Image (cartoon, rainbow, N blue to C red; front, side, top):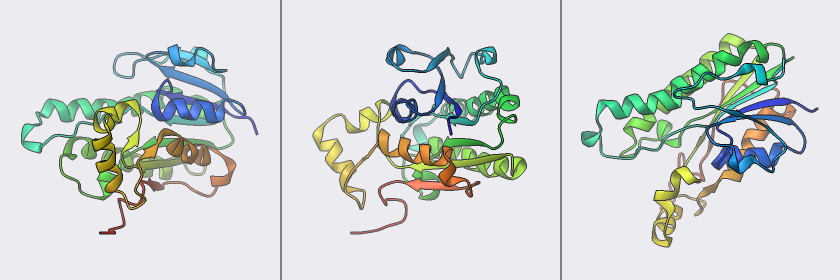
Length: 232
């Protein structure tokens, strides 16, 4: 069944991979700061900065069946060197941006027979990792928001969250920008590979689709095994 799906931040990384995956079979609305990469895609682009703009909902259809929030941050530094402003900035983009975006389109989602919402966390929420205090704090809030919304809006909405490990996207480029860094990152994962944007996009597509119609309030760990397995 063809659905109307809004992707916040769909111009690069996981969001852009999701556009490639879904655009042949669904009607996509992409709200992002830059739409250059979407020029040849069959989507409707909405200029939108989650930190400063109000989403122009007049450009959206009356009914939305899916909502995906992709913007995020990766501030990996020792806790002693993190200023409170860094925690605030991470919370603004990871949590408040999601809240603001979702609240603006609630009436559209409520007109769907059953809308599916997808958020993104990080494996570092479940598995304590050094230097992740700021991003894990805000993404932990996203996991709490996911479960709360899933309970509050059931059965009208299904709300789920994906918690990846390090994924090869522009946001993570500084951690993978040479062969030595990539090899080190791969070696940390039991599956010995770093995830791709397509890996996460495929899981997102599953959560948006009818195949996952009996799932809500879940945190899916798509992380190469690093969150639960110790192999050496």
